[in-house]
Amino acid sequence: MNHQLPFFPSSLPDETLLSRVSRYHLLSGNKTIPVTFDELFGKPPFPLEQIVPLGIEVLATKLPGEQRDELKKLLLENTLLPLFLPYLAPTRVSTNLTVDPSEVVSHIPRRVVGMHGEAHLCLECVRDDQRAYGVPYWHRSHQIPGVSICWKHRTPLLDSCPVCGCPFLLSKKLLGIPWQPCRCAWQPNVASLPSGQDSIAHEYALFAHDLLIGNLPPIPPQHLFTTYKERAIQLDFTRGSMVAVEQLQDAIIDHYGEPFIKEVDAAYASARRKNWLRLTSYQSALDTPITRHILLSLYLFGGVEQLSHQLRNGGKKMKGEPSSELQGANGASKDTEISLQQKEFHRSKVLKAKQRRPTTTIQALWKQSFKSMSWLYDNDLTWLQKHVLQPQTATSTKTIGPAADDERFAAKVDNFSRTYFANNSGKPLRLTIGRLMGCIEKRLRTFYGDRERFPLTFERIDYHTESLWHFRARRILWAIDELQALGEMISTANIASVSGVSFHWVNDIVDYCEWHCETLALQSIDIPSFLLRSGIPHNWPGPQRPDLQINGGRRHISQVQMEPKSYLDFILNPEPRKPHNWASRSRKRQPTSF
Image 1 (cartoon, rainbow, N blue to C red):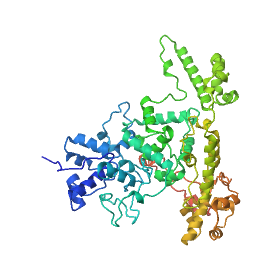
Image 2 (cartoon, helix red, strand yellow):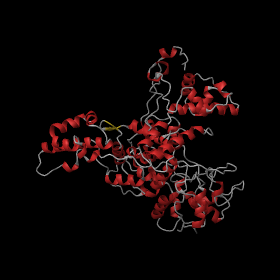
Image 3 (cartoon, rainbow, N blue to C red):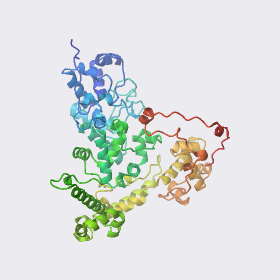
Image 4 (cartoon, one colour):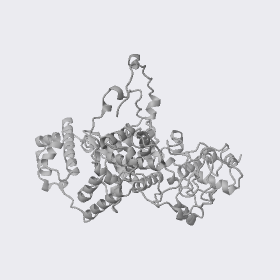
């Protein structure tokens, strides 16, 4: 029984399955899309933009060769499965990392929440593919959730016609562009490329592309999250012997900027931010969305190669763990082993404290690591005097001199900050550390000694970083001007809707500054200057008011209304609603004043 197709287009590098099927439809000359789906999949049209389409195993039976081999090629070459594969290993997988990709398809989500039903195209890639292969096509790396810019050309991706606005991909349809012109006669060409680049978006797209082509094997969740924790501890995100998850989350948000994270993460954009960053898993690592894995891995490791190396080597020992070299020494007694482990642990803790801050004083070391310093002083004084109490003989106290470009970079940061706030066109974006560092041609990081090599630059970056409250105030003023231009009513609810600032925060800022919004709408104001006159500098910490939500009363939020840690927790552990207290229900509630 022969099910083979007379032909099927060969896969081009990084081509999506939807692109191959669309090319087959055009080359076969089929009159309708249902005919093509029936030939390839034996069923009516269904969405092919899913991470792994449901009928892919049927297509594998109609291609020449063994079905298992063809299915594996389709999965690894034409779908986004390799991107998700490292996070698909169930908890029961412990040491065997050589799992066949075709065996874990059933565990993968069909789509990413808030990111499906679109096809993204890079016009530069269309031109390059036409020259190299004679035909353009759609790339997998452009369809990765959260990617909005081409990793290769740094150009923004298109998902609809720039002339008539018609989306490239419609429900249960195949793609006509870039092989055929749009219904408005527009054809993809580089001259119609939109302008503008985003260094953070490109960094995200490049890391996601490398992760896609890296073909990492499934990683047991416990091993993956242990690697995350070890790296976070190496970067000094610690709280005692544990990982300071909230501090790490704030650093990630500050690094990427809230606008970018809202574009990448649907939960964060919907204000579902409780336990947004979790270093635990339930059944697989995909209990945490794939976009959050990419953001976390990129921030911690900087590249897929470093992530893969850390996963292979198991990472360094976490703080507080004894050295493996001291375990099981031949002929050593149990007390001797414990003593050696303690010595190694306290030495390591003190040396790491000095490496993080090479210029720290002995007094500061005593305050930071009193327990370890005390133990070493009582039990290992010779080593302590040689490596810590005499800084000139310790290699860890070697300081790094300022770089030659430090002053020039600092001046560029100052100029960039001035021009950034002076530009009032478009919706305001927060001036984050990432954007300030992006104006420098050199790639700097807040670790690896860059702060010591570029002290002036980082001093200006820290100074010019915009506070969240100042950013909210800018958004409010911009929203007032937008509402006036649209002829809409100037109200707190409309301002909150247009600006994206919470209703309560809008009230707090307007009340603190004593603004009359209707009067402001009739004026033409320069937002930066107006904020300064209102007593709001760029690093404004916000209105100093007590947080009423920590108290009970009318603003108390019951446990029933609180958001679960994740959708999975909500499904697996449903909590019945508590019965109402009829006595309290009968009392008339007064409206809350803001």
